[in-house]
Image 1 (cartoon, rainbow, N blue to C red):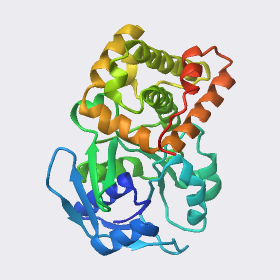
Image 2: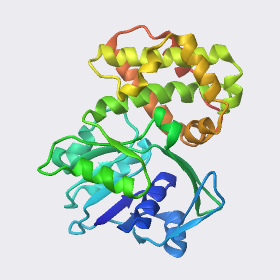
Image 3: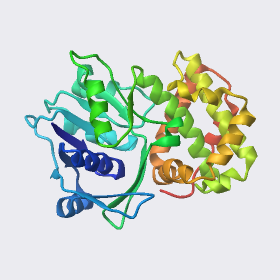
Image 4: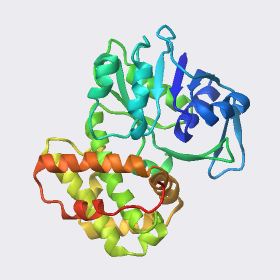
Length: 316
């Protein structure tokens, strides 16, 4: 089983390391300082609740040759990086490209490059950051985190074998809880509607979830924006997926009370706030994609509009 991971950031490194640790033949495509660190030292992973550092040697490459075939190519980059990555994939003949990219804009750009039958979509339930130059401190979505999100895998065109279930099984073997989904576009649009509201509300309070939790009116505004976003998606014919997010349609004050509690936990810092602070440019792209859906729906969305006007003063 040969797996290529395109992208050596925190999440790409996490998946590469965990897959290598489960016995898979893993190569990571990287460049710059991160390439040199991985090439010299391998991947170093530390779970956020542990002091133990796991070390995994992996192969590295800087480009992808047409005849260099992998069973799965995991594309694990930020939304702002995908346009630069796509040309690297164009001539390669691997059978399955798994795009693990945050987007609400659909997948036509991926289809144009590798063809619909080779496009798979996945999204990680994980957070992390690279510290001290090489150690990835991470958290994988387990336990209560799965009430919000579980690593999810799907495809655009069904193939002759269950590659979705197969890949999900590979992730599970590597210690990453994973489920499958037949409607990943709806799943990702739902995700963007939720995370955009959370990120923009965090930006109003310097990216600090505890500060946000102390301003219940802003938590209510965040929840109102989430509910508006889900209403926009329903108006456009999209499902709210996963269905376990049904509670987001409860009365706003109840949902806000739950979020006020969650925002005070380590979960909010590791799974929400850190990414929002690091990925300001990506969140801006996602916000504009969400606003495009709002425009298409012709719905009145005052909470989304209010939060969209907030500009973070860090991360640039």
